[in-house]
Length: 329
Image (cartoon, rainbow, N blue to C red; front, side, top):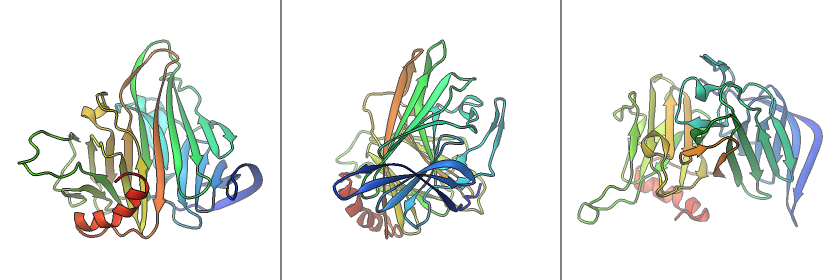
């Protein structure tokens, strides 16, 4: 699945602005990705584009005039018992654990969108086969690159369901996922395990797309290697990232100690096949009664001119000032 670049046709309807003393978030309706009625949020640094005719999807996140860090895969599709599911690209919300066909309930139609200041709220119609309603809220900061993505699952069926919110971000090809390890310590100082690692039947840690070091796990794309690779990590460090062409994308999210997570207890997953790559986060499992909801939040940031080449020590030096600025050190 190869991401495709798409131009933006701006429709000159300004929906509103969130104003500060010297900054504002601009909100516009645009055509993007061959999709009408997308909503573009922008400030002095970055832009975020959200589809409303399909999805919901956050389909673009990048510096003004720069590359899209999110992947676009309009040609991809999966045939299921529920119909044709299309990933489309960008960022979406699913239910975990993964199940066929439940997880692949088609979302190729319009969503309800409301704008309040610099926040867009997107609500999908009730999935007729599952009774689940998926909701995204997207808030762009007035200055800088910060974006808050809120995820909500609501059970509108007649019975309780066990689910976890699952936030999946398809990244633009050609980069590397970065997952921090727990702080390294010698056997003399640390006798007990500090995290769990989940592997799938197709996971092969000898595949050269993986790089496992004492400080970081890395997964890169390789268009010549069609086979799938995936791991899950109980990531308590509070972040994971994606580096591409000197840009660093960081998403922050919580680890809830003592809660039960899907997929053998993980909150972070990384997947690739050929040029396709996803960085995924999960919330804890929840039993939703009829009308019940569960939420999961991510905070996004973007940085320029970050060199992630070299060993773990070099990567640590490159990341350290940016992670410190986010309160992660």
